Amino acid sequence: MNLFYNPIVTYIPLLIKLFTPTYAMALKVFAGLCIVLSGITMYKCVYSITKKREVAILSALIYLMVPYKLGDVYKRFAIGEFASFVFIPLLFIGMYSLFNEDGKKHYYIAIGATLLTLTHTITTFYTAIFCLIYILFNITKLKEKQVIKKIIINGIFILLISLFFIMPMLEAKTSADYAIFDSQIMSTNGNYVYKNTLNIGEFFKDIGEENQTTYIIGIPIFVLMCLSIFAYKNVNKKYKDFYIIALLFSFISLYASTKYCPWFALPDFLCKLQYPWRMLTFFAFFISFVIGVNIYVLLKTLFSKNITRIIILTLLIITMVVYTMPILLQYETQDETQDMNRETQVLKDPYIHHFSINREYLPVKALRLQRTYLQEKEDRMYVLEGSAQIEEENKQNLSSSAVLKDVAEGTIIEFPFFYYPGYEITLEDNIKLEVIETENGFVGCKITQDMEKAKIKVEYKGTVVTYVSYIVSLVSFIIFVIYCYRENKKR
Image 1 (cartoon, one colour):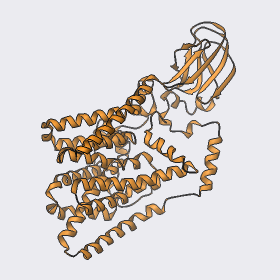
Image 2 (image 1 turned 60 degrees about the horizontal axis):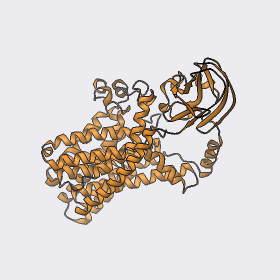
Image 3 (image 1 turned 90 degrees about the vertical axis):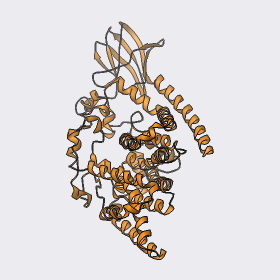
Image 4 (image 1 turned 45 degrees about the horizontal axis):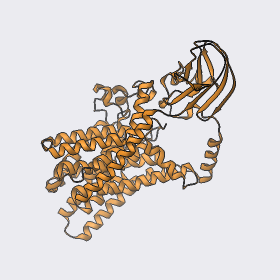
């Protein structure tokens, strides 16, 4: 989990747990923070672009109430996905500043992209594609040396600060085959994605999928989106280009979720999202900006009196709240005592069944044996080849030791740990043995000589790559903070 799953959604809830009675409460607090912070970052993004507080507030409110986002929190609890809603706006503050203004807030690109990378890999990948298209729309700006320089600076900071997450993961990828990287196991191919595309009717009616995913856009958002036809000509010229791009990206996101999009014809590397309705994340962001502008422009154009604008705006907000309430009412909760009892039971259980973890993070060899070998396997060392007697075995956390007797040369020992880089195997007198992945996806080693008796120990210690990447990321983060301070001071 810690090797492949993004650290922000892993460790921040654990830090919050220091101040809450249960892990469940910590996760709820984290979700609540994500909801509030997404509204704040959206406000900051839209205000940074339009310089209109009214537009920023309207867009932030829409962003808070988009049904798909609420479904992510209250129905699916897709923690990585709903947390990413906080950071997409930060990235586009930097993108807009760099390509449409003076570029003095360009460092928000590194802030937003780094936080996205450490939050949700799938969202990061498709956000990068939208950013690339955005750059193509502004390709003439690439003639300016300062723009190129700032792109390179942000790219370097994104890579270096995220290195502590990226490098160990890449090291693992080159060490063994893991399910998370297997396109067949993970169904990251065009045919599977197309199979999960939506009918247009699902944007207006919650059909109650088994996974409780909410695809609805809702009539209020659809109507407010269609108002672009009337609002377009009165949109402020200073940010009209971004308005057009946001509207286009909204349609692209929506289109990519439907059966009209030929996912089956696209290369597999573009199909990493598995479920095309995940594109609704981007629809939520871009359409919130568009709708905020639409409402502001039309109210200002059609109604001269402030009181009339306030009444209409209040009615719109009430309509949105009423429309999204059914999603919140379907949220199933239980009292804190039940949470605590369940957690106590889990924490006291000395064993974690392989069906209780995210199996996509298992070695492929182990995953393929999940209903056979893994079901029957005991929590101990095994002799896979050759001969040896295993005595005085002792396993604690991520280390295990035993005494081997009458060991034949070429004997392969399998330890009770799934294979990941970072384990170290030693015989007495600190003789290190080569760590291998066994045919079953576990940590193993091969004894290279006959031995009458020897003590063997396996222990997880991490890798040099991991330690170096942590140091590089920490130093890079400190340098980036200083850099942002200086850039902000100039601004």
